[in-house]
Image (cartoon, rainbow, N blue to C red):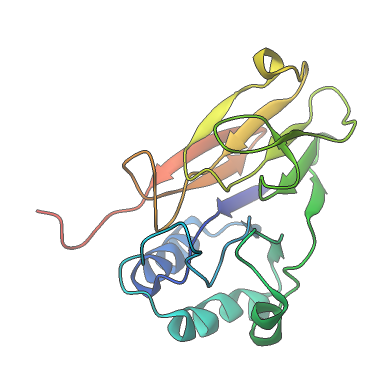
Length: 189
């Protein structure tokens, strides 16, 4: 099972186009979107090429393929659901990989492992589970035991469009392991 995990697109058509190229190249079994898809939010500057109306059809291509799981971010609203062809309003979702590992998918503002600005609020999860979240725009891939969650792995793919750690990114989960992938910028020399 190969997952492509992305978060915090915030309506950037430029970075969504790069993400869609990555989806084609990576050929994941499923795309996981961890919220904050169309709106930039009141605390963020406008992302590059802010054009939610151009992002909508790009994301809806994923629904056509039938391989998207999404959760609600703090900047997502019912009006966003009206234009997207896949459910986005759940606070969390769970996937189970072929080994039986639970992947708890959330944005990070309702549930989280306490890293950066994410809340420290997790439901009881079996040992070996992973909490997969966004919200902070900062990449994380580490044991959550120091945060008070023994037996839980924490993974944040970072932000597609408004990174707070310097690089635009997404994540891959494959063969039981997480990794970060930095998106390229065509205008960088």
